[in-house]
Each structure stands twice: as C-alpha cells, then as structure tokens.
Image (cartoon, rainbow over all chains, first blue to last red; front, top):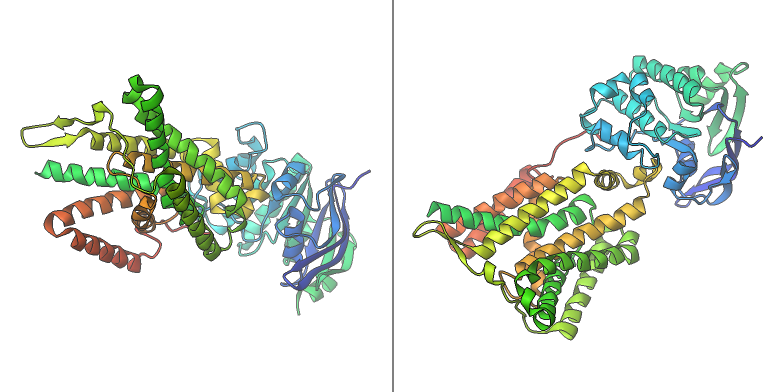
Length: 232
Length: 296
C-alpha cells in the first residue's frame, strides 16, 4: 500500500540556515499526525516546503505515489494537497464566497459543496462580507473550508489555533474530526497547543532544531514529556 | 458656461481614467512599477496610426470606421507585447521593485528608440473620421466637440468592461486573488504564473486603448508616453492602490480640480495646486484617498 504522503531525507534551507534536517516520515490514508515544537524549530518551514512555497535542498516528497518534490504549488494542489497557512492568509478584499470560489479553480463545478456551510454555518451568514473583515476564528474556518473544496487527500494545517480563543479552538477540532470522517483526508498539523492535538491527532512527532526527536501514538503518548519539549 | 466647464472636466476625467485604468491593474493590483507604461500608450497610438495608413491605402471607403479597428488593434498589439514582456522580464522581478523600475525604464527607452528608428522621428497625426469632426450644438453658445464625446463614451465603456471582467467573471476573480496574495493563490490551486501573465497583458492592452484614443486629441511622437506617465501615476496613487473604484474616483476628482483650477488660475498654477493637494491628502491618508482597511 502506498502512503498518502511520504517524506524522505528532506532538507530545507532558509537562506544560509539549515532549518529542516534530514526529515523522514510517512502518513497513511486518513491518518492524522501532529508535529509539535516551540517557535523556530522548523515546523512552518517544513510545511511550506511540503506545499511548495519554499524550495527543497535535497530529499523527496511523494504524494499518493506521485513525486512532487519540485512541483509548483498549484500542481501539488491538483495532486491532492490542501494547505492552511499560519496566519490564515485569507484574501482580504475578496468576499467569503469569493475566497472559497477562488479555491475551486481545479474543480469542475462552480457550486460550493454543501459540507462547507453545514460545518461552518457562520461562513454562510458572512458570505458577502470581505475576508479581511472577519474575526480571527472566522478566518480560520474560512481558511480550512478554502483548503478543502479542492478535495485534498492530505490536508496540511499550520498552527491553526494561533491567536484563536479557546471555545473556537474546540469547535475547530470538532469540525476537523467531522470533516475528516466525511471527506476521508489525511492530516498533518503543526501545533504548540497539546489540548488541541490530543483531540485530532493519531500520532505525535516533536520537532527540535529541524529534527524529529520524539514520536508516539496517541494511546501511549507521554504528555508530560511533550509538555517538557514545548516549554523551555 | 457651467455646462461647458463641467463637460471639460468630464473629458479630462475620461482621459485620466483611460490612462489610469491600465496602470491601476499593473501598478495598483500587481504592484509592478512599469516605467514603460507611457511607451505602451505610444505603442497603442502608433498601432492606430498604422491602421489609418493601411486603411487609407487599401480600404479608403472604410475610412470612417478605421478608428474602431484601430482601438481594437491597439489593445491587441500592446497586450501581446505585454504578455511577452511579463514572461521574459517582469516575472523574475516581482519582489524587486527597484530592479523592476530600472528594467522597465530601459524597456521604455528601447521602445522610444524603436519608434524613432522604424516609424517616424517626428510627430505623426491620424486623420479624424468625418463623423468625429463635428460638434454637438447644445444651445447657441454651448457646443461639445464630437471627438471629446467619443472619448468620454469610450472611457466609460472601457471602465465598465474592465469592472465586469474583474468582478463578474471567473478569470477576474483569479486575478483579484493572485494580486492580493501571490503565494497563497498557488497554494489553493491557482496557476498564478499564468494569471500574472494575462493580468499584465490586460493592463498593457488598456494602455494601448488609452494611447489609441489620444491620437484624436494630439499628435504622437516617440516620446509622447513621457508626457502621460506622471499624471497616470498620480491618479493611481491618489486613488489608493488595490482599489479600482478609487482610481476612477481619483481620476474624476483630479479631472474636475484641474478644470476648475485652470478656469480660475493659470495652467501651471493649477498643476501646482493639484500636486499640493495630492501631497496633502497622501500625508493624511498614505494609502490613498479611497483605500479600505481590512484585517490581513
């Protein structure tokens, strides 16, 4: 069986600094993994390299058996990757509806799939508002919806809880679990909030200085140990 | 008297709007400081001139409609040129505004020299179609020249088409998405390089339409573009980049001011007055008069 996503000996540089060092991991269909670590440990760099916003120095990225190491971002989306960036990066001057429609470029239909408004009713209420006028939590929901309308096999989420209030964080976790069951995608999420990842991840990887230093499944995860890594 | 002043203001407005629409897309939306934009207007003017020469030689009976063909041809010539300019040069410079300025300035100089070498170093004029020569006599002492009315109409038609294209079509939506966040557009599946190329081509094509319509007002010389480019940038910056409506409003505002200032003051004082006002407005609203605030 081919993995949904396979990363081999990935090295990514940010200018001269070697940020991601020889990373290897495999993600099975419908599996979800959390990559945790403090700021500056390379999580965002790794995820940006996965979607093609940063070039890879060496190593390979394989998505559903297809090597996409040097593909353009939009080709990776066509190959089946969805991406929710840190800070959400909603198109500020497009309406909520237009933000979603812009992401449906690769799908054949122009009708927004029903799951979007079922799971995020607030987006339906706000569909004619500009993306830039939404609150942070609403923008996060929009960013997730926008990444899912292209029907990805692997969804990449970069610190989705950053700057979001706790009640909305729980809602987002619930929505993600629901969507995952309905749409059958695999999930890679980078996070610092353990409470959130405990609700959605099957497997945990800790990243320190560009390398994975700890790995465990949810059942036998050592939360104290993860906490120790997350705090200085 | 008032009607005449208002009409002059309206026609200055339409000229400014025609000039600024292309730049509003290239500079306002895409953020490319294209110093060759004026030369692209001149290219549009020369395309129209070329059309008139061709029609005179081969279809003299159709001379009355050559101008319409000229406008369309000007659009296509400049947008095709723009497409190749983007692919060969601009696309490598998106994150380097200073280099873009220098490179496009060079392109402008090359174009000017090409016009001098291969078209005519002296100003050329196009014949005015007979139906554009007359005036519309509204009352005894108020009359509007047909050519001006035509430009006003053309400006409104162009602005409406651009608006509909950007806000009512799928391609327009992609343009707005890519110009707001190039990287993120790729990450949601938009082929942003292709969108960039045709957006730039569209902006250049609009410069062509502007240049084409100016052949009715003045002759075209190799360095004609230089005369237009400064005003064009002022209109776009004053209106607030990223806002097409702002550009249109700004053209209206500056057009009216220019007319009224010129009415009460001398021409150069009017220009100085407008520049002062623009500076004052930009001091208090650095993002332009009509910029909107959003959470990014």
